[in-house]
Image (cartoon, rainbow, N blue to C red; front, side, top):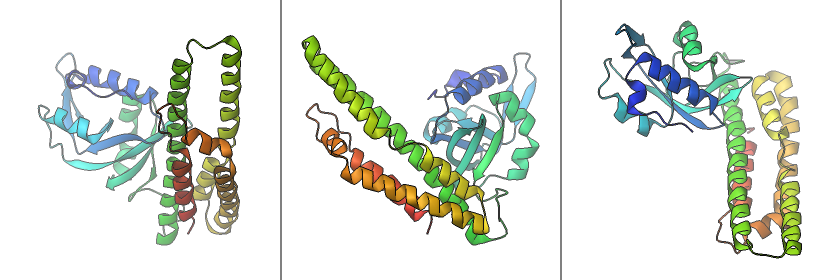
Length: 269
């Protein structure tokens, strides 16, 4: 993820360039934070007031960069974002974000990030069945579970890539026959992890977007997928074999996958 630097806040043009670059690199569970307002001048010294001030990146990186900027710079909220249908979807974890204000500033955000901004979950979101507090809470839980599962899958991919690099480095001088056997093992790993496909993410999101009987029906499908994935995690010897690898890479796949699946299960309670 591209991290904001001090020079990216020197002008409106610099911030716009950095924001568009950050938007292109957004993945599931990418952090963001929002502050009340800041002022940035453009190259011709014309002031632009950003209200609210939305930044893609960790709050601990962003906050120190604000000290030299004009504006109240009051913290409003933070959370994680992802790309959904080429829109930046925000999930608020801490604080509040006024949905009405966000909508009123939509053209400015579209200009800055090159993409539309939507709130997927949060205190001020126009959610389905928002008049039902229990339904609104479950909507947020299901959305969070979908993001968590996608984040877990990305983490699994990262750790497997680390393991592959370690294996190749260890057998760098191996015979061609041994290299072929290693490649076969890598293909088996891909086949095993490929069983954890997008069905769970899609079903969790479908459950979050539905209401009433439709949500209950969709959640039955979600529960079935969770149970299937749990059986796979516990029964696949390849996963245990990966976790016990002798190459110094701590994958911890079984525990991580089960933890995320438990969260998905709990989101439906």
